[in-house]
Image (cartoon, rainbow, N blue to C red; front, side, top):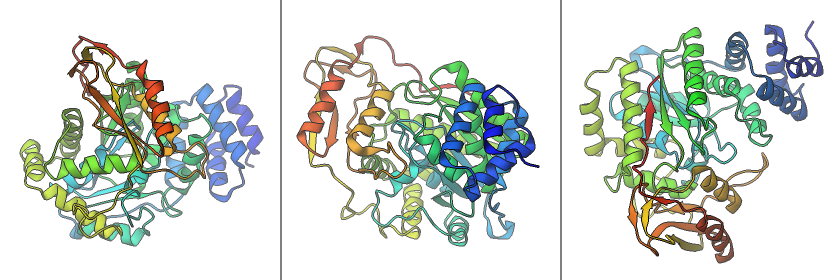
Amino acid sequence: MSAFPQQIIARKRDGGTLSESDIESFVAGLCDNAWSDAQVAALAMAIVCRGMQAEERTTLTRSMLHSGNVLKWPGDRLRGPVVDKHSTGGVGDKVSLILAPLLAACGCHVPMISGRGLAHTGGTLDKLESIPGFRTDMPLPGFQRIVEEIGCAIVGQSAELVPADRRFYAIRDVTGTVPSKALIVASILSKKLAAGLAGLVMDIKCGSGGFMTKREDASQLAREIVATAKQLGLPTRALITDMGVPLGTSVGHALEIREVLNFLSGGHRDPRLAEVTLALCKQALAVSDVADADASLNQALDSGRAAEYFARMVAAQGGPTDVFAGAVKLAQAPAQKPLTANDDGFFAGLDALQVGTLVLSLGGGRQQVSDPIDAAVGFSDLCPPGTPVQRGDPLAVVHARDAAAADAVIASLSGLVRLDSSVPKPVIFETP
C-alpha cells in the first residue's frame, strides 16, 4: 500500500530515504492532482534541505520520464543523430536559440523540450513567445514532423511528455525550491530522455546568476547529471561556464531575441556568448561522433545556413515566415535610459543575480505561477567585462514601462557598478 503524502513528506523531512513506491506515488500524485500544491512544495523543500541519494535521484528521473510518452525516431527519416543541449539556467542565456539551428545546419536533429523562467532566470520558451505567433505548445506529431523535416524545434512540456515535471517545475519556481541538485537532475534528464536523444550536452552555470554559485557545487551537479544519464542509457557531456555576469549583450525576452537574430544574421556576436555556444556545439557533435566539428560549425554560421534553419523553425511553429525581416514586430518598452559609469576604470560587469532580479521587478519574470510576463523590459547594450571606460560612458540601457521604473533600476545599480583593473575570468571554467 502506498504511503500518504504527509507520510512521504515527513520521511524526507526527517532525513530518511524515499522508497521506489514513495517516489512513484509522488509522481502519480503530480499527474492526477492527488497531491496538492502545498504538499508538492513541502516535499520539494524537504528534498532541498535533506538531499537525495543517487538511487532516489535515478528513480525520480525514471518515474517522471515515464509519466508521459517517450519519443521514438524512425532512422529512415533522419539524416543525422538526435542530440540536444540543456542549461541549468542563467541571466541572458540565449544559447539554445543559436545552438539548435546551428546543430541542425550541421546535419543533426534537435528536439528541444525546454522550460520557462525559474526565479531570476529567463526561460527559453518565454523568449520565443515574444516572437509574434510563435507556438511552444505544439502537439507531439507536429513537433516530431518539424524535427524530422527541418532539423530542430523548441517546445515545452505537454500533457503527453513528462507531465509530472511540468507541474513540479512551476511549483518549484515560486516556492524557493529551485536550488536542489537532485531536482535539477531529475527535471532536466526526464525531459531529455523523453525526447528520445542519442546524445546530450549540459551547460552547468556557475556564479551569482546561476543556481550553483560555487564551483564545487557546479562540478558535483555536472558529475551527478552525467552519472544519472549514464545509468539511464543517455551519453552525456558537461561544461561548467561562468554566470557571474549576464551572458551576451542583453537580458529580457524580446531584447534577447533581437540579439539572437543579429548574431545569426552576421551582425555583432558577443565573444563570450559565441565562445560558450560553439564549445557546447562541439561537445554535442563529439558525443554524437560527428567529425570535423570546427569546420562544420563555422561554415554553417558564416554561410547563413544556421539563420535559415532558425527562420524555418520559427515559421513552422507559427511565427513570421521571415523572422529576419525588419517588419517583424517585437515588443519595445516605452522608456529607455542609459546606465553610465560613475568613474574611470575597467568595467567588471554587472552582477548577474542583481540584473536578473531587477528584470523580474520590471515585470520580465514571474513571482506567481499565473503571472504574465512583460517581454519588452530588461537590459540591452551591456558593456562587455574588461572594457576600459571613463566616467559617463554608457554601460547598459534599461528598458522599462515608464521613466520612473527605469530610474529606480538605475538608482539601485549605480552603487553596484564594479570597476577594476583585473583580467576578466574565463567564460568556460572546466569540462568535467
